[in-house]
Length: 200
Ligand code: DC
Image 1 (spheres, rainbow, N blue to C red):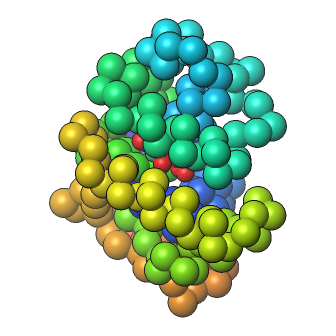
Image 2: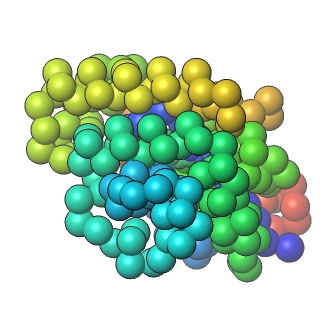
């Protein structure tokens, strides 16, 4: 049975970094599901048509990391039919051997409700804005406003809003370095895998 890790949380909370590190450490597949929504938003046209015909190439656009692409993603992510069009791909990705890590907003609640481990990664607004601004070379104040606007939209939408799954472990990375956050997450995976009879 593949081991599935669901990581959710607000923008720039550190979930992508943790997801990447876990996939490397355990040799699991990794999917940044935000990229799917960013690609749909950035491509334009009818969002539903775009979501239904998304290709691997669409996910490689160089402009997907910008604040604008994030806003566009959050806007198309409100549309229930767009979300539905992306469900099957994510669920198939999640059950690959030997395991998969998916990060996003609704992985533990909607996409993989039976994930072996669910993490909900948070950090203060200021810390998240500082991290994201330095990552993409944007203004911190503008980035803070953009993150807050996006979080509000992601949390308040009717379909698959951003919220922790009932059985998610909350990881607050505000005061943590990347290494500390990853170490904590690795420990949680190992503990959960031991419960499944695996040694590491
Ligand atoms: O993780 P990210 O910042 O790249 O996500 C961009 C936007 O995509 C986010 O503001 C909301 C949407 N999103 C979503 O609705 N569900 C997901 N699983 C991932 C992202």
